[in-house]
Length: 179
Length: 246
Image 1 (cartoon, rainbow over the protein chains, first blue to last red):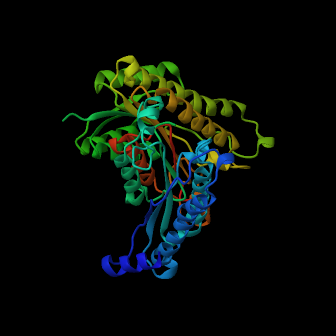
Image 2: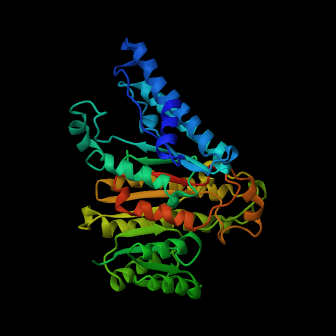
Image 3: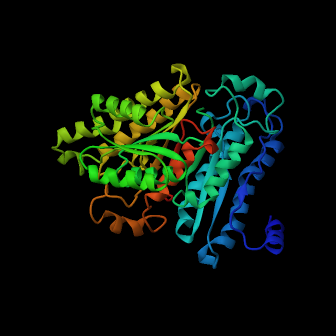
């Protein structure tokens, strides 16, 4: 992580806005049938500790307390926080709940230092993260009759990074098609 | 290319006014209502027209069903088929502790404008925009408030309760119409520097906020326009806080 940020500094210049997209669902099963505990721990490490460490590097570069010029951070939560991912991956839902609380807490902490920290909360989006067949199966059952497109999630992220969101901090933007 | 048509209740003042002006810049024709202050609504319409959009101000008390129906019918007739609604008209209602509350009529007026009117304005928009009713879809944005989750104890618990009702409307009604081409969402502003605030509150509260300042109405109008736009095409029944981390 430190090398990633240092390389970005060297190659592109001072950072204005990291987006913490990297995440995995981890082992999929009912909780009581879970056997791959190492896989769950790896999921926690990437989803929670990864976001945490990335924000740490970013805040120390962008915060006015550290001589930075401010900036915006977007973390990725999930509708799984509300659903719990019951029967599928309860650990994943819990990892994203950690992101929500972290976003709120850090968002309040650094709001006066010129950094806006927000979370984008996708519902079921048609990306390669979904298991084969899930979009075709679930899409028609959703309120809007379809899964979301990654481009519109990206549009929400760009909105949160933009000046149009200048008073949005510590907030969650749901892009979940009413579910 | 013809403009889309947006109706903004309470569009003569505060966040509604800023939303009307920004909407005109983004290619919306705008209808606003006013209760009694036609001069303010005329100013909003003049700015809308300055940006090359059509503007219309209609006298209508949106706490009355007949006026709401007439407002929408006038908008139909003068501007055309509705594409979007922003429900910005709202009041704070009785302030202070509940054990000292005496203004029960004020409480009734609060429920009527902030809740009943939100439902009736939504009804009129849904009847026009829903594919179930032969419409071509559209977007609705409700104005909620950070008060809905803060509760604002000792200051304005009734207002917080009315906005919690708006949140439930956004979630429930948003799901109800999501499959009919209508995206219904809400924004929840924190302390915004508009005339809805009592004198001195922005100056007093601003430095205590996480951002060390109150928000400006333009900073709420921009997220409202984002929610109305195609960029937000998978955002429905969602609640967006614009509260500066409060």
